[in-house]
Length: 315
Length: 231
Image (cartoon, rainbow over all chains, first blue to last red; front, side, top):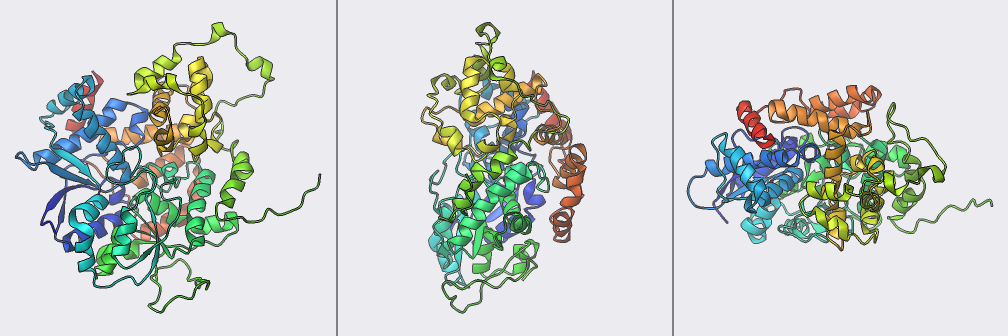
């Protein structure tokens, strides 16, 4: 176990709709002997909206965050900046690569940073919390820390788009497995399904997840994911992106009415599931913030039995 | 021909495929914005252009905007991008056609297309492209050009969203989901506000949607930095 503290970049969604993600991440990292310190005065990553207006300015936004993370850790050691949201992760990695590549762009970025008294030395590396959990803290350490095994809970891991695309930093682009390995370390049973990285349409809600930019398109995309996971026997879906989580969780009632196929699949953040298995109090994991949540009873579940419709209130 | 046979459910993917043929096809008209530039139906002969009307430098113009954009010229029109794109069914020009038309120089049609604004930037096309054409980045470049030349579909939600989002960040350094959503609803389709009020209120009850506006402390820093990038 690494007694390490990481600078942490939450992103705007982790302060809003994805608040449960931040709460559970902080609790889980602390329990595992690592810590997350929020980057002071971080700014928005620009998401995919800013590149639609000005590409280089979007890179500069993330460059400031990278430089800030170096500023708070003086020395020569590399700095692992943990970016929680998949969208931010992509933006930060893109900026990191642009800064690393000598050329007019990195010169301009360096100049822009210098104009506000910051520098980027190339020490900051962008990491994803999933990467840290699986590859730094390690699955063995997590397995040892489990106090409440999940007893074969069938979990479909949904990775979403921007975690593995376009940069395959720590997992396979076509069939990522890190989240599946993580949930099996908790005693759960990962569900094999092919839509792990298919777009959920959450970006159609981008900028404010209560927006139906293209409601019909979004519902079609999320419906395919939810139904596929349900039919393969998943009892829960876990994800690492605040946009995906809300998008998949929030409109199941509407999708049921639209497509005439009952959907009731709890969608949680993987960090919440880790927290439950580590025995952390549900209040600290933001469980009550979810729109639907239930862990099946400890009795073995009969194959083919339909789960009782429990409504979508908190369990 | 009266076929009243219900398609058997082959597997869980079936609804997706079925959707691709019928439901999605119906939806294709829906993204057309109210009050936006309507595309009038014209006989095909009218749409053909004389070569002199084409802008043959358009592909290079796009390529200059994107790192690795020159690979646009090596596109083999295999259609992988259009087939992996989860949203191509909603696009007026599929990614493959968009690239073909860009290379042919159909500048006007490409810049007035909805497709770049329908793209969710999931990068499936970029990863799958056998010729490594950075298609998603090209979509972003097309958005930039059509923003500059004001050819984007008026009152379609995505351009409005982009502008609202960027303006907010420029001023405050962070976005607040509730405010951006609210503004966007009011600017584009206020009726949707009511439709989503239930989900919204549940989020408020769970502390996931707050009206407190997020901001960074050193806003002038951000402004200085962005200005430095403009020069």
